[in-house]
Length: 133
Image (cartoon, rainbow, N blue to C red):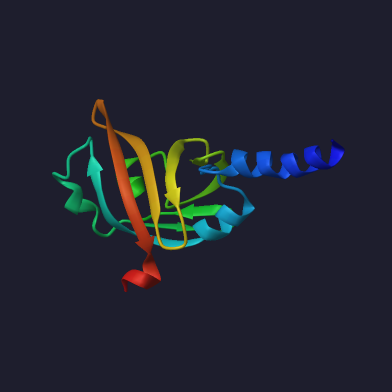
């Protein structure tokens, strides 16, 4: 009976991890680098999304860099500390980015910015910068 239980525990752990998108240290390694905007939507529409063609997010071990975001969100600097919390990137406790997908060649993010008086939801897909160049 104990042998059966010992065989069953790894199966449960494997089952628990299936489909999980929660970043861990390995995911932080995948995230590290420069990611350039590939495609996406703004409030569910592609209208005006071409303005983000030069959007690049750069992640180091503990810093998030973006030239364009401070223009859209003045409370953010061009370089800010960040933390991975479950499936979110929290930039200096001011900006919360949901990680929808993270792999070696793809990064899909969702976040909300206040542009004017209404919140604007961005659902964006990025590719590693060296692959795009």
